Every structure is written in C-alpha cells, then in structure tokens.
Image (cartoon, rainbow, N blue to C red; front, side):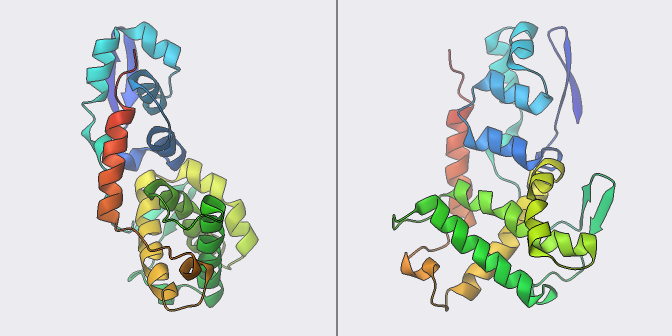
Length: 223
C-alpha cells in the first residue's frame, strides 16, 4: 500500500492487483464507476469523503496515475496465498495430476453450471468478465483440500466468499487461468453442454484487451 495526501485527506492506495481482493476488483471491472467511486473502492473511503477531499479534476488525474488498473494481472500461479491466519503453500510443479479425480469433476461441473447460468438458452461465448467470475469457484476446489487436508465439495464452495474477500485478485486469476485453460482443453473432447452450445474458450490476450477498453471507459469522469 502507498500513502498519499488528497487535499487534506490521508489515503492509502494499493500498489498493484496483488493488494486488491477479488470483490474490490470486480467492483472496479464489472461496475459503472466514475473516478470518484473508483478511488473510494481503492482507498476504503466513501465517495462523499473523496469528493470533499479536493476537486474532481485532481481526483480524475490522480486515479489515472495507477496504470496497473488499465491491464489485467499476469498469469503466474502463486507460490502461496494468505487467508487470514492461514498460509496456504502450493506444491510444485502445479498440474491437474495433483488434483483428485473428484476435484477435477467438480471443476468441470462448475464450469458447465455457471456457463448455463450466464448464457441460459443463448448460444454464445462467455464474456471475459463471466470467465473471471468462475475463477474463485475453481480456485476454492483446489485451495480447500490444501487448507483442510481432505477435499469436500460443499466445504469448498462455502469457502468462495472468504476467498473473494481475503485472496488477492492477482492470485485468484492466476489460479483460475491455469485450471480453466487445462480443464477446457480436457473437456473439448467430451460430449457436454459446453460443446452443445459451441462455447469456445476466449484467449486471455483478447480478454485482457477488452477489459482494458472497458476499464478506460469505466474510469472516465462522469460530470
């Protein structure tokens, strides 16, 4: 976190996606926030506190100095994550072979269910944000066994809200991209709803570009 003065108001701003949890990241990426609201999310202030701090032009240009907001994190699988008092270390090398068959099956079921929830009966690709929203559920399947020592599907999904709040956006997308890329490749040869609706995985590069464009629009100051 980096400390700044906004007028007479002291604020702390995350220095990167590794210091922003999943919930805050989705508020920024999935919302229709202006510069004031974006800065409020980043600093744990209310929009009213930010508005009182200084003028709108200063807030707008200040917000746009945080260049990491204009691109998604890299795809690196984290070595470990901190969840409250719990440090979860990931074994190396990471591979689907490290996951139980039940975990892989549950991950596949989650992808198909959430795909259907997002698209209904419409034959379309998932959007980049929809793909990202699947990732905490996939990550929970992997993390829960490491945390508890034994895999339990319901316990894993009950853990999703905690993961969204306590794990960084960067770590969740790193885990999610890894498993989604491998699971969709595995599922491509199977008869499933995924195939029936002709839903192909978008490249992460394309997703990143679209999100950067959306974020640029999101951060535009609404007067």
